[in-house]
Image (tube, one colour):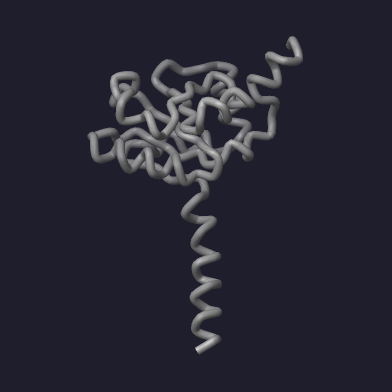
Amino acid sequence: MRQIILHIIIGILLFLPAACSTGSASGESRSLYPYLETDKLLELTQYPEPEIRIIDVRSAEAYAKGHIPTAVNIPSAEIMKRLKELKKSQYLIFYCESGGQAHRVMEQLKDKGYTRMLNWGAFSRWPYASSSTIQSSGI
């Protein structure tokens, strides 16, 4: 019995990182896969494409402490109230603390007909200076 419980726990622990990781995409989002690489997302922030938006679904406080440059903050708790800000024709790249909030937001939006979405995962994956760091250092 202990072995069965141990196997279940190990299985859950192996599954959790996958549930909160990157790379979850919806329908028409295959073209967003290159942006899972941090260097490609950095390029996108330096040379934004109007048809792609980066959305930070963390709290306003977390966003203020640091975020990916060009990202717009729409906290997950507000997403359904702010649908007019998200065009279904745009490609949307979501990120949060671990990937879990972004995944839930994508599920909600999928139910509303959005098909061009990518879960980039955790903000901690961003190895470059964040916007608040850049602004506070005067660069």
